[in-house]
Length: 159
Image (cartoon, rainbow, N blue to C red; front, side, top):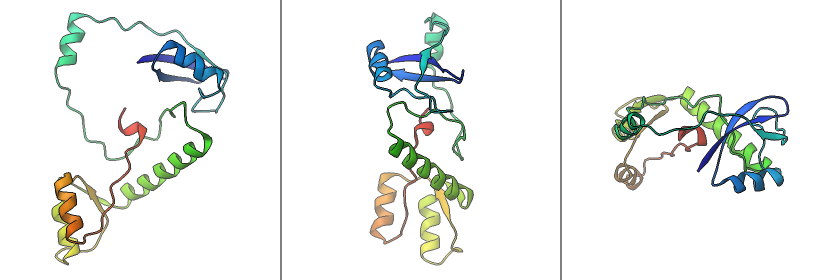
């Protein structure tokens, strides 16, 4: 993968990832590379510092880096370049839905299966919750007839 620093005609800067240099050129020719801020397809590569591997960088990359849990999706994101306008609209609606769910529900973390059962069986007050569950836990909840819905993974959740 190649990461390019890109800039549109209105000087909005953003990044794009491409399989190869020719893939960038092909997508740009077809109008698929688009500024996430203004929608312009007049995009050029901007200067960026080279990514030089040093022994210190290699050692740091081998060490696992703790990631803080993310409770709310960020509001600043870079749209993937190859989406159609319909796909971007659908992604925007998914983002809105997820933000509303997170804003109006309690994060119960790893206790999600336990809390969902308590609510379902009347042992706890009915309320919106979200958290984490293994596939095994999710299968068990489904077998018990407990309604739940996985939250969508959005592009910015994986960056």
